[in-house]
Length: 64
Image (cartoon, rainbow, N blue to C red; front, side, top):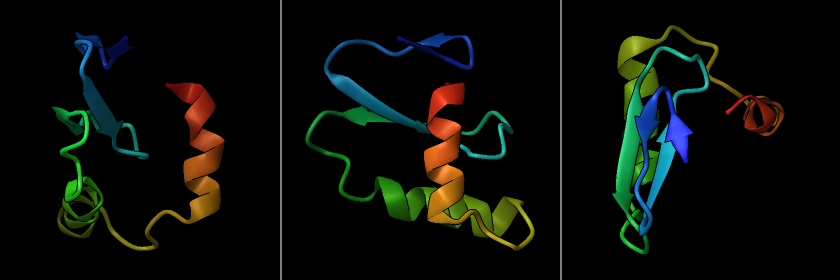
């Protein structure tokens, strides 16, 4: 699977920034317990409120 032009290898999972800024997290399957926290930290540091809502996340899934 490609995300932002990067090939995400099998056995890994990824999460990209809802604001399409290019921020991408990649981790081994089953080891992503802190991924949501890392993404929220990215939002708080790099993007101004309002933070994305759950509706924003759901509606952006088709864009990846």
